[in-house]
Length: 196
Image (cartoon, rainbow, N blue to C red):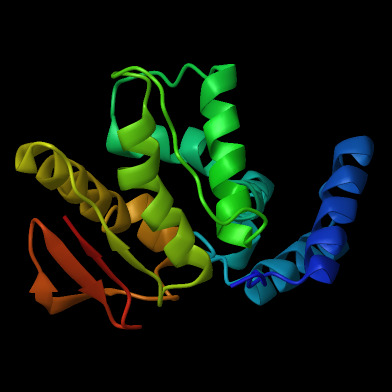
């Protein structure tokens, strides 16, 4: 669980290439070819033709995979369309702790903050979707004092995973099985599941 699907070498190559493109302001055929090769190696689907692949698409995908907080910022508009994401230090702190939990740097985590501060949204909706990008075999069980809240978050998590944005970026890594795709329990083809 400590390894991520992207090798550090590919990420370093991509970051170096993106920096050189930003400095030069050019988009030469050779650089576009290198971007296309990196995108293919990273599993990023090209929109239309290879030449149409956006540098920002690659950057966003890499950043989302590397850091849960970037994923939260990018996925927020998918789950909450029409609502602007307004970051705060506590959201970033929770994301950093969840990132460390995923990497095995911490073993136990309790989050005690007032209602309405996004803890359920981060933990129950976005975190399972982000973890499944790296390891679709992981299983999640969620409970609340009210079954309606657990069901609400389960539906939102499933909607994110089935969204075109998520499928376009990570749809090749797993898919939700049709025989176990309910409001409170869904499973992917890699034996990972989420139950509320």
